[in-house]
Image 1 (cartoon, rainbow, N blue to C red):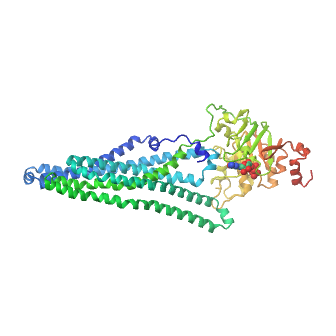
Image 2: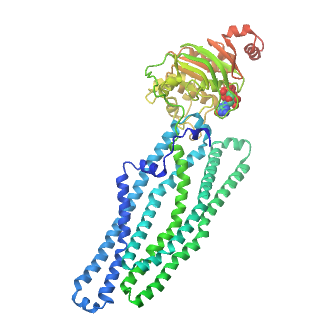
Image 3: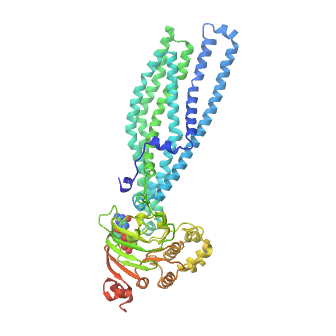
Length: 596
Ligand code: GTP
Ligand code: MG
């Protein structure tokens, strides 16, 4: 389907998957299954004793005599019926608890595992799957899976046991009558198989519709500002309404599918008591069957007919499970492509911060054209590299190769002389402080956001890094200072304020390599100057790679690199590039009004 699912490891069967994840509760779950079987076999005891009572004390040859002289047996039958009913009730209660708790345990484990998987995925994964779809997998789909374990399997076991046990009992009483009753079964199975073929694709479609609806809602809620800005509420409402209608229609169609097959099943199921009445009646007249046995047959005919009726809803739920579990398992067994090499070098110490690109080429998996071509440059520890270039030239793509968000398609990216593919991801990324172009802050306190990469960062350090990024002044003016929760109760931040917090967050891990992607673009010139000044005087050694458009940011860099269409157009110091009178010079002239 897509590039990411290709990375999916081979997916085992659903049974294996469920069984693997029941680990820790397997014995418990099997106990529930045994309980279900026991309970259903015990359902036969009442008609068994009723038959005994009738034949021994009510209708048999010696009924009157037995009633007179065998009172104890009579009381025993009654007591056994009451006692077994009590035990059965207890078993039902117990198994209900077991299935519920085992399925909740399963749900809990899978949900955690899924969340883990999603967390560990690489960028390509997030480019492929939409948030709404992932959310559907982790909620609705997962619940369909749980339903299978809690209800469907239980119902299947109950139905099969009941049916089988009753059949065995019937065969023992009168095999011919049992055989005649059995004739109906194949017809019912044929109908159910047809139903399965019909309803299966509908469940798959229904699931897609729900996912689409959720994605639509999610994108709308997070993008509500755009909707409002363009006054597109009506359009969006109509779009949602359309999706909602389709979902509702598909839901209805799926539910109604059963109604097409239901009359046939019901007719077959209802045929059973009639066959019993006719054939059983003849057998009684012939003296083959006692009245007690007939009572047992007719008292248990439901135990043959009901499992057949249940087959419909079981099949329905099973198809729902099939559609949902495929979606859940796809994520469950997906593996990020970018992960530690088996022989990755261990570099637990702080990196020195040398970054080297050797003939690097890069293309997005889903992209047609190469974004970077044959790029080579080196940034020594402690140096500052500024990257410039028109929009879309590949700056962000370039810096994303350093923390190995994407894999190069040619050449090598080396950090401290080691190819990033040979470093441990965790160790590599811990050494890189990145302020991304699109700032994302958590709905947490300002303090919590700055200390995101290091929970144990003391308060005074948080304040220090806020000062480095020229954020301390505006934070001091916030209602609760560093404890102000962002995004709550009307506490919004401006674009520049967000950028400064994101810079503080990147600095707070004291990275060996600091990467800033247009991080001061929304900050005024004065504040930016202040930030540049602090970056020069950080109290830890740090290599800086800064994407910027303003000359004021780039001019103090040790090296300036101008990118164009994935190539290095120019590279040198501010002075060298001005001398060169190329692209950089034209930008300088443009920004300074030609004063240079
Ligand atoms: P600005 O941030 O606008 O200054 O541009 P940039 O220099 O950072 O460009 P970037 O590296 O983001 O993009 C370079 C090229 O790659 C552009 O042509 C984009 O269309 C393309 N591109 C960026 N991200 C993706 C992606 O996730 N998938 C694909 N297929 N192409 C991408
Ligand atoms: Mg960019």
